Amino acid sequence: MAVTPAYWSRAKRELASADAVLARIIAQHPRARLVSRGDPFATLARSIVGQQISVKAADAVWTRLIAACPQLQPQELLRRRPSTLRACGLSERKVEYLRDLAQHFVRERIDARSLAAMTDEEVIAQLTAIRGIGRWTAEMFLIFNLLRPNVLPLDDLGLLRAVSLHYLDGAPVADLLRGPGRQRVARLAQAWAPWRSVATWYLWRSLDPVPVAY
Image 1 (tube, one colour):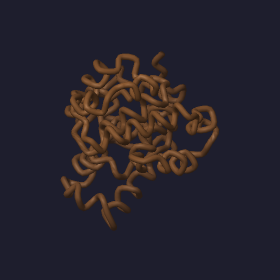
Image 2 (cartoon, one colour; image 1 turned 60 degrees about the vertical axis):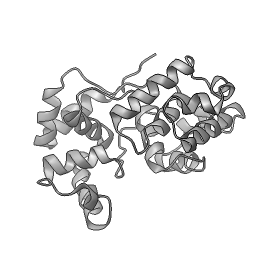
Image 3 (cartoon, helix red, strand yellow; image 1 turned 45 degrees about the vertical axis):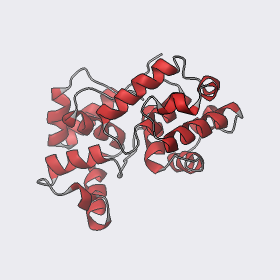
Image 4 (spheres, helix red, strand yellow; image 1 turned 135 degrees about the vertical axis):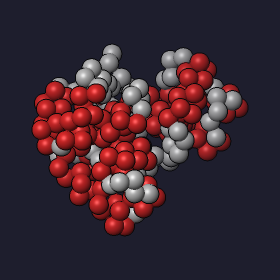
C-alpha cells in the first residue's frame, strides 16, 4: 500500500514561503508527492539497482528484475540463479550485493521495526555495514521507506544538478561533490530545514517530472 507523509502539505507551504525557487517548482507540480511502498527490502534493492546509473537505465533494469522475480521477496530472489539476475542488466557486483541483502533479511539481521525507532545517523550506520550499501543508498531508504523529513543526500547527482541549475549559475557538479562546493550546498540547504527531504524531492522533479518510486 502506497503511503504519503503526513507532513507533506505543511512542508510544501513552509518551503514555498521560505524559498522562491522551491515555491515555483512546487507550484509546477501541484499533485505530485513522495510515496512510500512500505517494503524495506524492495526499497533497498531498488536503491542498489540505481547506484551509479541514470534513472532511465535503473527503471529499465528494475522492470526486468520484477519480471524475473514478480514478488521480489528475499527468498524468491535467492532462488534465482546469478545468471538470471545478470540477464536483467545487473552487474556481477550488484548481483552479489542484492543476494547479500536478501540473506540479511532471511537471517533477520535487518529488523525494519528497530530501524524505524533509530535516528537518521543510526539507520545510516546500521545499513552501511551491509555490503553494497553506502551512505547514498541508506539516505534513499530514510527518504523513501522511513519517510524521514530532513535528509540531505549530498552525494546525489540529481540534487546537485538541480542546485547548480537553480541556485549556482550552472556551477560544475563535480565541484559540488567535494570541499568548498559541498559545503556551499550544505549551507544553501540550511534554509530548507526541517524539510530537506521534501526540498530534495521537488528539486528532483524540476529535472524529471516523473517521480521515482523506491
